[in-house]
Amino acid sequence: MQVTVRSEIWPLADAFKISRGTRTQTEIVVVELNDGTHVGRGECMANPRYDESQESVTAALEAVAPAVENGALDRRALQDAMPAGAARNALDCALWDIEAKQAGVRAWTLAGLDDLQTVETAYTISVDTPEVMAQKARANAYRPLLKIKLTGEGDLDRVAAVRENAPNARLIVDANEGWTVDMVEPFSEELKKLHVQMIEQPLPEGDDDMLSEVAHPVPICADESCHTRQDVERMATLYDVVNIKLDKTGGLTEALALRDAARAAGLKIMVGCMISTSLAMAPALLVAQGAAFVDLDGPLLLAEDRDPPLRFEGNIIHPPVPALWG
Image (cartoon, rainbow, N blue to C red):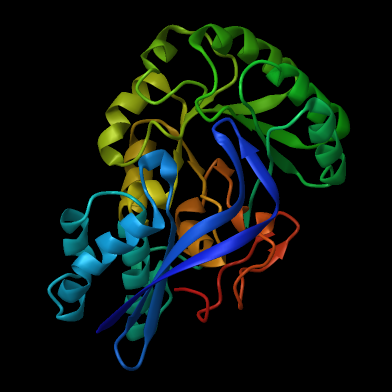
């Protein structure tokens, strides 16, 4: 087996703003596995929020490449050999891809799933002034589900502006750890009046213990606070929903385990993504089957996507073709 690790920069269609900053491009790392007949691929995004860079992710992958090449590190052994995070995600998904191609079946068959169904993704409106967000909402009012990035003060005006300009859309919001605990109850009450269906990660990771004592008529979803199945016991005491992202779980293998553990604990499932290409979204579609919320719009935020890409029809995502993944 030959392992190739490649860094890529993909420009965004527009500047993307969240509570932690603004970006105009996304830093991707791709792993390719070649057995001489088949090629398996996986992709991750190096996330500074978790102290990741293209350099650190690439170094982590190159460190384990010899073990993969000599057959000493398969997907199952990988779970203990590397920590959860972007690097393990790219390699794990590449191993899923090549296993499926070697077996002559689709990856979801290996995962014990029936034929993959289409899913409906949210479309994200990044944080800005209410006036700018109103314009973006008006341009995307035809979409059935919008995700609104928030930041703290002024958020109610932002959501009201989106609601006014997209009156028929379902709305979910994401504070990206930007609120304080005293905002949660009053903001939740007002967002309920605006028919918001979910609030994602209002408080910083590690500072969210008070959520168990705060009334919130709108369900609250853990994102930055939930990485792997080991987090589920704590999440069940604080949150109503968990957002599963493969770059956090360290790949599809752990993402499927986290999904099962969260459901067993009575938590609803959201499947999210970093800003990445269709290659990163494709394995997440397996986890997204039956999820309450899906946010896999990363390719829609890019200036261009891979060839072949996932097929989007509005907000509907179709299963990947084998040439893309799985």
